[in-house]
Structure formats: C-alpha cells, structure tokens
Length: 510
Ligand code: CTP
Ligand code: MN
Ligand code: MN
Image 1: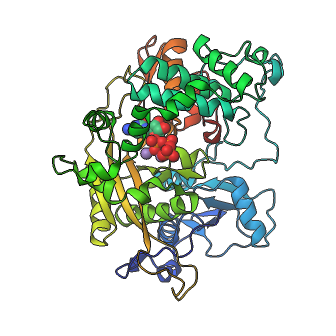
Image 2: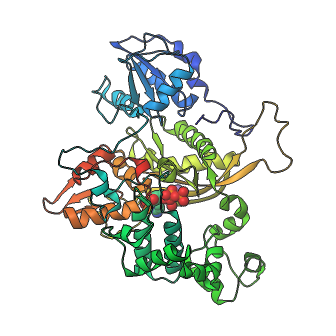
Image 3: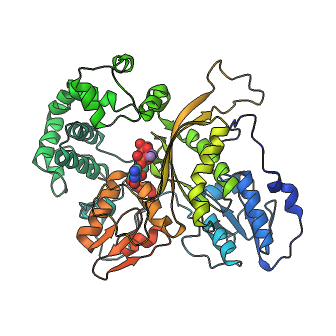
C-alpha cells in the first residue's frame, strides 16, 4: 500500500523549521565508519525522518540523504522486509545480500546507547517467501491434517483470507451477539469460541463427521451446524434476525456511546428507530452519545486502510512535534491486516521521556488538533498504572494505561493538485481513533494486548492461567510458581515465556 501523498491538514500547518533538510548538511564527526545508514521515509513521514537523521548524525552515525551503493543499513518503520525490498525494486535498486534491513527500534536503541547495538531477530525485518509454511520445529510434530486442534486460539493460526466455514461462523456470531444482548454470557462465549475455532480450520465442514475431534463444539453448537448442513440455513439464526429485541439492540448499539444498558432502556420505553430516539424531548444524552448521533453516518461506514494510513500520518506528526523519539504503532485490527475497521488504534511509547512529559503528551496532542479544528470528540482517561500491581485475574479487564478515545476530522485526500475535483460541501470524514500510552518497559505487553483479536487475547490469558500458572494482562506477566514478574522486550519474548510458538499479528484473527 502506498502512503497517503497529500493529507490536507488545513492552512495553519507549518513544518517545524529546525527539522528541515537544510540542517542536515551541518557537519558532524563520523564515529562509526563501518555503518552507512539510510532511513526510509515511507510510512515514517518527513518530520520524523529528518529528526532521526539529525539525531543519528549528532551521535556520530553516517546517514545518507539518498540511497546509494555505499549504504549498509536501511532503517524503516511499519514496513516489513518484503515492503522494503518491493520499494527498492520500484526505485530500481538491487539489494545486495549484505544490506541490513532493520526496524526503527534498532536505531532508537542505538540512540539510547550512543553507539551501534547488536542487531537481533526482533530488529531485523522479515522477508516473506511467497508460500509461508507453518513453523514445524520438531520432527515429532505430525503433519497439519492430523495435528490436534487446540481449544486455545493462541495455539492456532487464524488468518483473514482462509475462513472455509463462513456460513457457520457468521451464524454463530449472530447467535453470540443475541446472547450478549440478553446478557447470557455463557452462551455468548460458547458461540464465539465455536466461531473462532472454525475460522482456523484448514477445510470446510460438509458433514457432521467433519466435526469429530474439533474442540469447543458442544451439543447446542452441533445442532446449529446440523441445521445449516441440512437446510442451508439455521432456523435459530433466522428467528434472531427477525427478533424485535435483537433488531433494536443492534440498531441502538450502533451509536457511539450506546451500550447494553442504554439500549435496554430505549427498548423498554418502546423505541424502535433512531429518529424517534433522537427527537424525543424527555431523553438526556451523554456527550459521547451526542457525538455518536452527530457523526453517525461517518462512524458506521467503516474505516478503510487508506484512511487508517492517513490518520497514522496525523498521529505520528502530532506526537513527533512533542516527543520526537516516541514510537507510534498501529495496533488493533489494522495491525492484524484487516482492510476495514471500526476505528484506528495506536500504541505510543517513548524510551526517553520523563514521567511528566509522558503524562502530558496525549493532552498536548489533542490540544494541537483542537487548535487545528480536527478534534470532534475527546475523552481522556488518566493512568491508574502501578508498577507492582499483579496482572488482573479477569479475562476481559480494562487496562490501566493513559488513553484517549477520539473522533478526528480527516480531510479527504486530494485527487489532483488544484483541488478542483473536490465535491461540493463536506470534504472530511469523522473517524474513531484510540490512543494508548504506555511506559517504555511495558510496550511488549501493551502491544500484545492491543493487537487483539479479543478472542485471541481472552485465550492467551486463559492459557496463561490454566496451563502455565501465570497471570497475563496488558501490563505484565507474572509467574505464580516462581513469584516473579517476567520481563519482555518484544511480543516474541512473551510467547516464549508462556511456552507458546510465536503467532504473527496477521495470524491472530481468531
Ligand atoms: N482492547 C483492550 N482494552 C480496551 C479496548 C480494547 O485491551 N479497553 C484491546 C482488545 O484486545 C482489542 C484491541 O484492543 O482486540 C482493539 O480493540 P478494538 O478497536 O475494539 O477492536 P479491533 O480488533 O481493532 O476491531 P475493529 O476493526 O472493530 O476496531
Ligand atoms: Mn480497532
Ligand atoms: Mn479501538
């Protein structure tokens, strides 16, 4: 995917001058002569790239403005190794096998250390071959077809492209949602787990014999499968889709800020449409619900990947204006490779910031957007994080990091330079954005926790508790047997602590 080329930021936007390329020519002594760096602008942005180039030069690194044969290390952000190779190909540059492709985290660590740090697996960008085969490490592992399917989503690889059982999983998700609306948590979970396990199956179910040996398929679930195999549809699902309560709850909860309690209240009061709810004089709406109604059409139309990329540029620029060393990572569904989302989620962390700088960052960022007229809704949640708090026992517990739930105004990207192709009237779309800020040493836990999917997270915690006697949440991992907190620099470290094979983000679509 190409980065957005022309995000319209409004007339007040100015590039911080001191970060311009003019400064880049200031001579610095080169201390590390074996390395020649090139920093890729794609998905990083001009401002942050200029900042990092200047910083690296100040620390004695040789950084080239242009890519040339002398470059030994390419540093990129939010790009896979394949992305970088593809970019090189487009530039008509042949990559030699000695060229190092590295994630920006390596450079940031070098800056912290004041010298080149060792390049490990977590820094090196992965180049995927065309047919990724699942990692079958040991010779004792049977071939995939007879491999036992785990009851835990964190021991399965669930990609987006290969759901052979969508007829069943769609049905289960509707039934689960209906149980959720009726606050029947047990049955809701039963059907969500069943949907999740079928999503990971490498074959379609065509007869009841195919369901043998698959975990998480109880009597109730098998009944629905049987119905669909026999009639092509499920009578239970049909009944739910026709149900007044289900239809009303679905409609009401589609408004940002409306949860089960409010939906229940409106339903009991006899409301069945949003226009009746909106025009009722006796109802009092929260600030969130008011925004939900105001931007309703935009918010129910999903966020595309291109829009997510454009928001990502906005977030990175704003964060870099206050904390240039901060790492901003897209999490949630977009990190799992989804093409659409209901919002865009970000994790922000800084290796250098003081506690105070950290505490103020999100406020400064939202103030900046407010000044620019881009902030349509903002809800700050202050941090309740404590260093030695044990991870929560609850599978669905909320985390303690500072965060904000936002609605941002994203201007449409110009199709051509002069703007004449802009349609009349509204030239922007309201987009839901979540920003989470975590202490640098907790970034791996926060990243794992905010990447999802929800089902994957639930099963990670369930697995930690029941199979390892450990406690995991978005902040930490605690070993109850040894009574120690287990530290992690990367998601790979956490999987390793848990004794799990590493599952890539795009395989976590459980
Ligand atoms: N999450 C969390 N605490 C919250 C909200 C979310 O830990 N208060 C985590 C969940 O694990 C979830 C992830 O953050 O998987 C992203 O949440 P969300 O945006 O709701 O879901 P997505 O998977 O991104 O899906 P969508 O495309 O609908 O946004
Ligand atoms: Mn999301
Ligand atoms: Mn979210």
